[in-house]
Image (cartoon, rainbow, N blue to C red; front, side):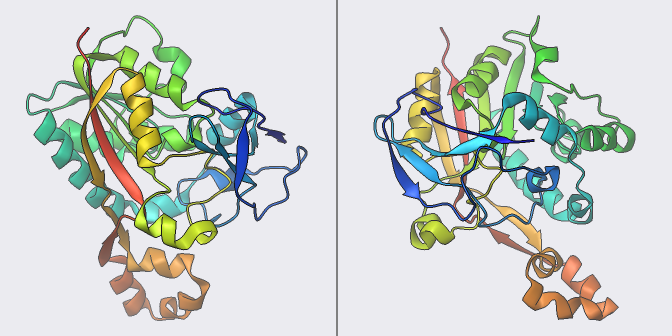
Length: 302
């Protein structure tokens, strides 16, 4: 699957741009991509093509990407056994996210998730009284959500087009919007699904965060699979343009086991030589935000 060069801003369509970060990968239209680089636990930190900033709307975006068809195929083929080993950390992360959503939507109701992966978030939400559904491109992850958690997920956005307009009380996109070609269309689809007054929740990295600003081109979440990079102003502008009012813009709380960190850092691999140490690492967690933000916005009543 080959990459194509991006010649216009994915949000405003402007052709006026400036190089934001020089890529660590060759910017070639025939460079091949692999599904492992698109898994949730991808190790492709710091591997990215040239990144540009639009001169007009100030969006930051990758200078090359797979075609829409190839991108869907890549995600459909994703398998991610590391995610299963790190699932306890995801549970803790999503428990915190649900506390925030429940505080904003105390009456709960119908919840839809874009990018449900193996269904951890939806399972927790269902146990807390939400009526849940979602969409997931990965055949592997969707199968686990169904077989392990009893969740029946859509396999493409096309399957949810009709007649579900104004059907949901909340729609969430955790670590999703940075992976799509057209973030405006993604937010518009979320708005279509939401009832007036419904809540949108999303998480994504922002490049004007302290960590991203300090690390600059060394920021680890500059990655091949990330096609869109927001700052606080560009993300708020996108949501407000699509008819949302911002309710919260919070630091993300991502819980990660020390064992996961050891797996990601070769210099710590010696810690896994002892079974006792390895178990202790896997069962103890630390919390970080790493420049990621959780944003909640309410759809305006028209």
